[in-house]
Length: 124
Length: 107
Image 1: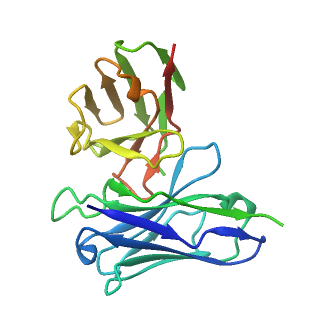
Image 2: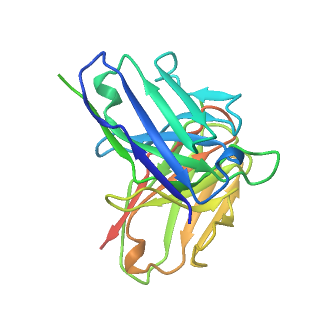
């Protein structure tokens, strides 16, 4: 059974930092591209960042570029999101999501498994 | 950035009725579109990918169609568990984007 378990959320002041983790199990983590998607309270879904299976390619939404860094440790089957210079509008539930990979060429496409999410609140 | 627009914002229907949800892209995404279902307090669930392919374990009452800029998610006969928010998502271009969602609630 695929499991994605996020941790690291909490309350942080504006300008502060936080590192989220996502522990993966039940699939070959090192073969799967991964992503972070967030959802502000009462709002819709927003893609945040993605990383290839090797970690060699990363992508960011403009809203977080230069402030957030995605990374992974395939030996630990863990995905990370380092969040710096946090702002009030970063307040959201952050989901770790696995890319489905519809074929061997297209490895970043749709999100077939999601974690339960971790809440990040940026407030003074 | 490709903007996805969903309509209607809210769809009020009764169990057993047919639901038709629309997603329109600001420019062509070919068939690179997915649909998700989200219930309160839960993570989204993938329903349809590549516009018309049902994901694993998704009931046959869910179907997707369309290509280019106009897409439709159809629920042929609403079950009580289908009342939720539905999002579309494109993977044609970075950044991947989601639509604002359509809430299907009980009439």
